Amino acid sequence: MLDYSNSEVVLETRDLTKHYGGVHALEGANFKIHKGEHVAIMGDNGAGKSTFVRQITAVEQRTRGDVILGGQSVHFGSPIEAREAGIETVFQNLALADDLDVPSNLFLGREKIKFNLGPFSILDNKAMREATMAGLVKTGVKIPNILNPIRNMSGGQRQCVAIARTAAFHSKLTIMDEPTAALGVQETAQVENIIRTLKEQGEPLILISHNMRQVFDLMDRIVVFRRGRICANLHVSDTDPQDVVAYITGAKTGEEFPEAR
Ligand SMILES: Nc1ncnc2c1ncn2[C@@H]1O[C@H](COP(=O)(O)OP(=O)(O)O)[C@@H](O)[C@H]1O
Ligand SMILES: [Mg+2]
Image (cartoon, rainbow, N blue to C red; front, side):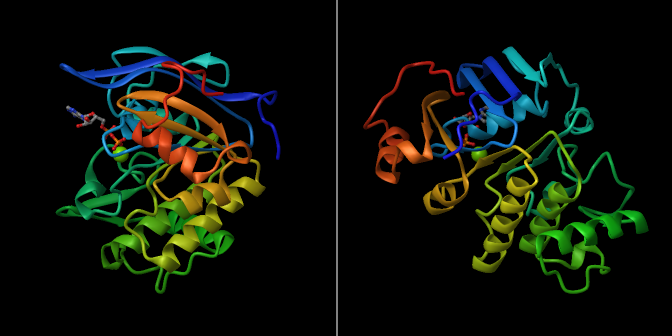
C-alpha cells in the first residue's frame, strides 16, 4: 500500500474545536491529508464528523484552532470562499430539495442559478450544463434528460450530479459528507466510480461514510471520531472492520488527541 505520510500536506487542522454552548461537538482535532490521499472519516451519529467539515469549510466559525491549506493558515468567511480556495464539498443532506437554496449548497456561488421556484433552483447557464455533462460523461453517471431542470430529478440523481461536478472541476481537496447514505445501489456504484476517478487523477478526498465495505475498498486511511474527538488513525492495510467498529463504539480506545496524519 502507498504511504502518503511523506507527500505534500494538502490540508491540516490543529486543535480544531467547535462548541455549541455547552456542547463540545468537536474538540482538539489534529488532522492531515496528503496529496493524492483518500481518507475516510468514520464515527457514530453525533460524533462530530459533519461539525469538523463545517469548520473547515466555514459554514460556521470555529471556536478555536487552525485550518492550514497548502501551508497557509486560512480563515474563510463562507463556504463560497472555501470553494474559491479549492475545497470542493458535497455537504450531508444535499439530496434534500430544501437544502438547495441554503448558502452552503454546493451549487451556490460559482454558477448562475435562478432562485425563482420556491425551494427549487434551476441551472440557468449553458456553459454550466456543458460542464455538468462533461463531468457526467467522465464519471459514467447516467442521468436521463440532463437538460431538464434539476427540479425534475430525484434526490439521488441530483446528488449524483453534484458529486460528478466535483470530478469535473479540479480542486485542491474534495470533501464528501455521507454522499451515498440516501442513494440506491446503482447510484452508490456511480458515486464510487467518481471516487475512483478522483483517485486516478491524484486528487485528495475526505469521505465521511458509515459503509465499511466502501471505506475498505476505496480509502487509504480511516480516521475515527468519537464524542467530538479523533480517537483513531488507521491505515486500511493495518486494520480490519472489527477493529474500526471497536474504536467507533469505544470498546477500544486510542490516545486522547492522536495526530491523524
Ligand atoms: N447547530 C448546533 N447546535 C447545537 N448542537 C449541535 C449543532 N450541530 C451539531 N450539534 C451537536 O454536535 C454533535 C456533533 O454533531 P455532528 O457533527 O452533526 O455529528 P455527525 O456528523 O458525526 O453525526 C452532536 O451532539 C450534535 O447534536
Ligand atoms: Mg453528519
